[in-house]
Image (cartoon, rainbow, N blue to C red; front, side, top):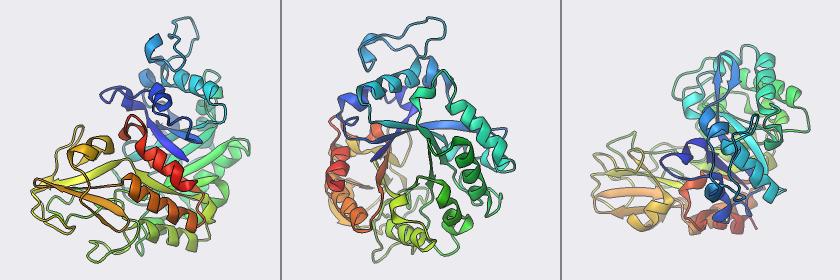
Length: 368
């Protein structure tokens, strides 16, 4: 089981590497993806140097209770905390993820010279200052030859070429993985790039089976952001987890190389007058950090689940409608993952869980 740790969590959210330990999550995880490194000028680049390796941790906030030093060459920040976490949990592996929604715009240029890109990534991930922290690289390209925050016209072969170059450079001793689209529609994002051809180069794919629906469609209809399967009234046919999994399998990708994605957050609308999915809305519901999105740990008590649809939960409270996964729906999704022979599950992201790790416990228990 893999969970994302977000570097910006150390700011407003106050979620540090130590919290992975104190919540009981470190003992349940096999892998952590550290999000994110940037992609700029055709190369892997540092995303936030202060968070990554510069912030000085006091003894009380440090994994091992030892404060960071300002000695020359001393590693600080999240990287040093991850090093300490791995010392405490020797079987835990950490991958450095590059890209993500905000920083995927640079992949097009990177794809023009995959070997040079892969070399830059290897040199950064294996930098002597933190080489022991990372066990590989994860590519979160949103989306090859398709549109995310920006549109990419790198061509259908670009993703395969980049993953091939990364595998060549990182070798068999390192993990090479990618987070990929879950758009299972005909001619959709899965069809836009050669995920089947690239599969031979990756250890696994993190299939982003969440964010199918949300309040970017401000007037609705309300719909669960992470449906496991289709349901009567789904706004877009094929926008559900099972559709993506079946489509990826049809491309010749082994089920064991696919991880099912779970969101540790909900998406919601306001101005809603009906409890059931499919209602109209007036806009995104308020959220702590951005409109229309909120952590599970907040929604659990603020807007408790009132129903289930398509293997996930929804909640109607006041004039707000939210959808999110609960321990119960995660149990169902893990049964699905096992039944499909998937390699496991992953989630976005650690800080959305309760302080005692309610959701990660359900993922772990469900995978058995």
